[in-house]
Image (tube, rainbow, N blue to C red; front, top):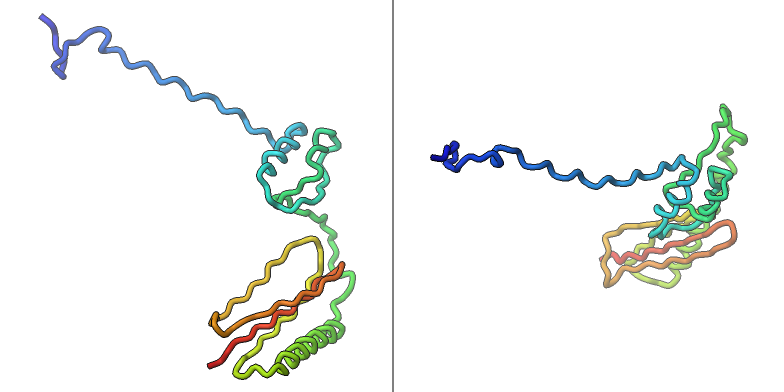
Length: 178
């Protein structure tokens, strides 16, 4: 006669053994540290593989020819670091009167644009003039404006003057007032 356990099944010597443990997961390779000399170029290649960032020159942190492979790449992850100067006062003090005269000239430019636009004789329009002077320093800038807009009657114009050192941008918004 067979002995039965609690489940009503015959007990056997193989049923009392625990199932074999599952195999351990495959071991993943350790990612290289960015502080290892030979891994620097590999990390740059991985980070910039599908990159669409602007490319600029970056000094590598090592004098190693392996690190020289990534010289021409720079991602937006890299930050420019400045050494502390420990200077308690500026090299040149801010002179409000000279800045005020320059700002006044810019305002005169906006007034000249406004008066020229008004000479066209558009009735019941309100005009908004924005004049921007942007220094070229190798960086990008996005300018945005939001308005309650009627696409049938409202419009805008952008005029750009560009030199080697700056970009002047004049925006003229025409909003129809009912």
